[in-house]
Amino acid sequence: MTDDTVLDVLVVGYGPVGAVLAALLGRHGLSVGLVDPQKEPFPLPRAVGLDEETLRLLVGLPGLAGFLDRVHTSGRSAVLGPDRRVLIELGLGESELGTPVAAFFHQPSFERDLRAGIATLPGVTVHLGRSVTGLRQDGGPTGADASDTQAGPVIVELDDGSRLRARWVVGCDGASSPVRGMLGVDYTGSTFTQPWLVVDVETPTPLAHLPYFSFVCDPRRPAVTMPMPGGHRWEWMLLPGEDPVRMAETDGVRALLREWVDPDAVRVVRTAVYTFHARMAARWRVGRVLLAGDAAHSMPPFAGQGLGAGLRDAAALSWRLAEAVGGLAGEELLDAYERERRPHVAAMTSAALRVGRVVQTTNPRLSRLTRAAMVTLDHAPGVRHALRGGVARPRPRLPRGVAGTRPAAGWILPNPRLRTLDGRIIRLDDLLTDGWTLIGRGIDPTAGMDPAARDWVDRRAAIALTVVAPGGLRAVSDVSCPAVEDLDGTLLRALRTRRPLPIALVRPDRYLAGLVAAPLRTTDLPDPAGRAQL
Image (cartoon, rainbow, N blue to C red):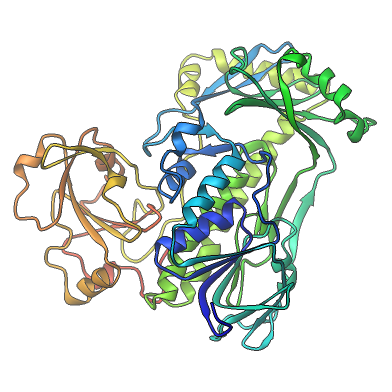
């Protein structure tokens, strides 16, 4: 790059969220820069869990084609009592996204593979060992009072005296985000003083007596235990008066491990003491600078959604940036990013806090009542079966409402098995691209479109599909797009509504933008300026 080069997007922070965002932007064909003060990924595991939605996102990224072969899948979790007996067991249900419902992964390996994949994207350049020291928009300082409509590039100053220019900048630089600090944006919420000790071990074989992610409701010392690829992780709450430094030393760790496993049969690879936060940035966009991941929000670990929330940010932001850069939507579309993501993050943070209050109970009486309630639930007629079937698992959902009638808007599209006209069995994701999709239930969704709707579809290179019920391929005729058979009826069920609305509009991030009637009209489509676009 020359000093006059203007990148489409500069991503500050090359952790998992920044890397995924850069990979998605690179696949959209944007010119992307990455800046990070570290030259290599952090060598030890930190985040360990992913859900089906984030797994679906990751397996499509460069370098991660075999990612699912290297994770430890999980379909259940449990709550244990002080005697380590199961109080209640929670099944996660079946996945409709073509991935495991949940899995544990090795973060350093994941980051190395993803970085190798990003290196194959011609539009992505990486600046490692460099820190951002200043941001300026339109020649003026970037701060909380900066205009949201500035048209010039953001000038980013690095610690070696060099400068980068970008149309948009995204701070993915962690909870202590220097970018957020330069914007003058508050990071409000709470930091909890209760310390936890995390210990990761390598094991020659999985620990058969600890197969599931489990919370340990023990008022003497609350704990969490979980399997990982090649090892296991424990997290123990430290008690008042305990010295965190001494508890993290060899003798302290071995004493804690001894209650679960022979300390000589495992190798400790990491110990760390942490406190958790529940914080959110007051604004996620100032002018042409946005925040994502921990720079925008942080939550306690009890819901296992800290990294997942950041990866959802990347998915929700990448296609919006691509449309804004490509002139397909106005800057208002970037404001919809925060409107969409903030409520979901707030809800997940609240859920994590609720779980944390239960897990961290040290009051013996309250703990006893909580455990008794769990046992009662687990033995209630019908409840036990429902809990093991995944009824308690939260499903991803967004607010309703783009243009027109959208009764099903906000659900992530399933990824069912399909049969093609030539008899192949594939997944829906095998047909989807990084752009918009039109799905017609038994009809060609592009038939009879008005010229303006055709232009909207063509400018976005949207693809079209016709989906029919099992056995329905024989009746499909006169369609100009691929026709597929929904073998299990999963996709058709997801698109069913009280009114016959046969065309589904699917966003690039696989979320359903809405259902509309046929033929497709311009008024059915999201506002090109982005005001009505999720």
